[in-house]
Structures are given as C-alpha cells and as structure tokens.
Amino acid sequence: MTVAIEMGQTTAGAAAAMDLEELLATRLLVQGNSGSGKSHLLRRLLEQSAPWVQQAVIDPEGDFVTLAERFGHLVIEAEDHTERGLQVAGERARLHRVSTVLNLEGLDAENQMRRAAAFLGGLFDVDRDHWYPMLVVVDEAQLFAPAVAGEVSDEARKLSLGAMTNLMCRGRKRGLAGIIATQRLAKLAKNVAAEASNFLMGRTFLDIDMARAADLLGMERRQAEAFRDLERGQFMALGPALSRRPLRLNIGPTDTHARNSTPRLMPMPEALEDMRAVILAAPPPDASRPQRRPAPDLLEQLRAAKAAAPEIEPVVAEVTVSAEEVAERRERVDRTLRAVLAAPDAGFRAIGVLYQEFVVRCRIEGLGAAVPDLNDFRRMLTHARAGLGADIADDDAWQEVTLRASILPDDMQGVFMMIARAAKEAWPCPGDAAIARAYGSHSLRRAQRLLGYMEEQGLIVCQLDGAGRRIVTLVELAWATAPGDPNADDIPAEPSAASV
Image (tube, rainbow, N blue to C red; front, top):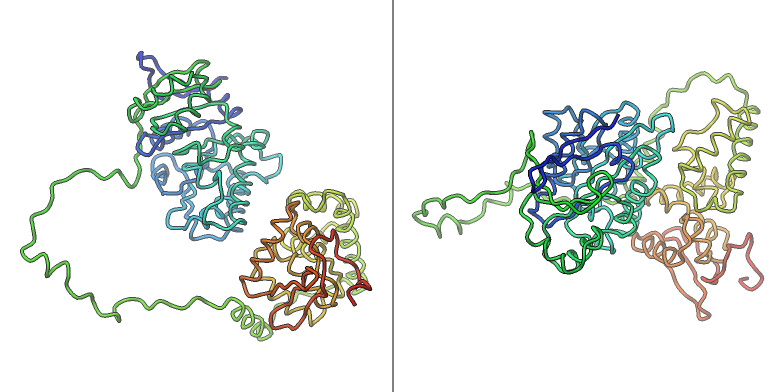
C-alpha cells in the first residue's frame, strides 16, 4: 500500500503529496536560510507521517518538544543523561518502536555533537530483528556534520560526522531514513549531503548556495536567481518521493508550534523617569551570586575514589566454580579475543562489529554465560591493543597507569597504555604508525595529535633527542621510553641494541 502524505499545495493549487515509502528508501535534504521555513516544513512532515512511521528528531534548539503533547513523542533531555545512557536509550527506542525527540538545548556545541552521535549510534546498532522503518530528522545538520573543522575537538567531530555518515550512507538497509535540514549547503559535509535523493530548497541569497541548489535540482545556473524570490514556507521540490521535475510548493499549516516562537514587534514601553539611576545602579553584593568554583582536578578525584573503594564491602555471591575452571575460562576468552584481533583489518573495525564477532566465537567455544559484556570487552580490547597481557594488567604498579588512563576518552586509553608499557619497560617509543593502529586509524597526523592532546592533559611530556628520535615521559611516574623513531612502523617487543 502506497502512503502519500500531504505537504501543502503547488503554486497551481494542486495538492503536493510525498510518497512516504519512497522517502524511506531515498532520504531527504532541506536547505534554506534562517527564516525560510525549514523548521515549519520538518514539523509538517513529522505531523503528517506520525501515524504511519516511527520517528526520531535530533533537536538542537528544543523546537520540536511540543510534538509530545499532540503526538505522544518521548522527549529526552540530553543534558540529563550520559553518552552511554543516550546510546542505550536509542537502542530501546527502536526495540519498542517509540518516537522520540532528543532535546539538545542548553548544551555547548561539543556536547551536542557527542550526545547526538551516541543516540544515533544506539539507533544504528540494534539487531537485525528490530530494523523497523524509522524517520530520523536532524535539524541544523551542519552542526553535526560540518564541512570543515571548527572549535570542537577532533574526537567530537569524528564521532558526530561518523554517526551522520552512517545514518545517510548505511542507514537505509537498517530501516533508517535520514532527513537533514541545513541553513547552508556549503557548511554541510559533502559525503553526507550527497546521499540524499530528494530535495526541498528554500529561500537563499548567497551565490554559492544558489548555484549548488540549482545543480542539485537540475536547473540551469541562470535559473538559480529564483531562490531569492521564494517566500517564507515556499520550497522548490525534486526527487522520487516528491516530483520528477522541479516543482514549487507552499508548505501547509501545522497542528503544533515551536515552544519558542519568533519574536514579534511590539510598542516600546514608556520611558523611565530616571533611566540613568535604574540602568546604572550599583550591582548587588557579590555574596548574592553563586561563587564560581575552580575546575575540578579529575586525577585527584579519581585517586580519592580509589582510596575510598576498600572501605565499601562488596556483596559477594557464593561461588561454586573452582579457581581452575575460572582460569581455564579466562584463557579461552583471551584466546578468542586474540583470534578476533588476528584479522588484518581488525585494528580499523568498529568496536560494535568486533564485539559481535567476539560473541559469536565465544558461543562456538561453548562459553555461554562467561561471555563478557560490551563494557568488559572494551576494557579487554584496550589492553589487547596496548599489548598488555594479564600479568601486566593485574600488576599493582600498573594500577596507577589504569587510573590515569581513565581520565581520557575510551578510544584513547589503549594508546596511553601502550606508551606507558613502553615507558615502564624502557622500550623505544612507539612510532606514529603503531599509535595510529592502536587508535584504529590510518592517519599518522591523528597519532601526532593524540600525543599532543595527552600532553595538554598533563599526562605525558614528549621530547626529541639530537637524532630526531622521540622520548615520552609519564608525568609523576618517572617512567620514560627509550628514544624511538617516530617513522617506525611497529613497537619492538624488547629494546633494540641501538637504543641501549
């Protein structure tokens, strides 16, 4: 059965319909300057399709939370949840087919990117049995898939851009139909925008944006001037779900409205009798203001938590498995992990993909309930990529390294541990290629940026000797690597003769 949703009317007065099933297969890109009516268009699309398909809205400004009152969407306040919590929320939303609005209002740009990426990852990574059709609407998509690096960290940009690329490039087979809206095509990553087959282009004034919009719609360059003449709520439509030829349409009304409406002109208030006294009055005493607290020392907090941990007596259930059986299972799990990592491309595959293969291999081995969960697998993978055996990971002297690594993002901890191991054993410093591989990247520049980031966090100090070899010293631990060639491909298993 074909489901057509009415988006409004054409300039000729005919109904402008969108084929919902075709939209699910071909995705949609919306462009228009601020005030052109993009959010109104998205709201109309969401309202008309709500009875037919599950929806998820990535909402950076909190404009779409009012959908909950009329259509029952679950509003998730992103600032109240961790990235891990949002990933799980995304998974559960797909499992139970609940339409959601992820409200990112109140977060800075970096945290918006991180939390949106985590939520989209949860939507993307569910099992095949739950690949139900779903519209995923991303407003202000240039914030989450920027064409160029901005002020946010490379890690946050990598996470967000990867999630958006997965949505637009690989989401179709998983039932995810990306609908992205942006103020300017020039600000949006090309590999994300290129995957859309349907377009709704609104009012825009910059020559570069008009030219790109005309190219996408198959219009001649001289026709690009028409985008300046569009009224608010008017869009040029093209695509298999809309029209086979460029078609101007007017978006219809909506049942709900944004929580924060556009400011309207209003009369000025009467002038105050003594404006100077009111405006320039002395500020209230500082005591009435909340005192600004200094930035917390994360390392000291972690040390305090570690010192307090023995005071809490854990509740231990009765163990009926012998120590020999536990050791034997652990060895089988480690052997299975080594088999997964033996694949040539294992260092560059996503953790979710590696974990799925690991679980399958564990079941084949008959491990059953002994299969580690995803969090334990991440820890094991971090140690394995750092080249750590069980004897090193369990060493008391190594616990300080684990503590320091925990203040870094998860995907950097393995790199830090690999360098720490080389420093502890006085081995040559790993080369850029080995660092990049431990991070899961082919980029040597990224390896250099990782070292710079760790140095900024006060964890390491990098130096070069007279021959251009790199030495990394761990702060406060007095461990230092032997000089190592940054261009070397691998970390040696023991110090070379030249480094002694």
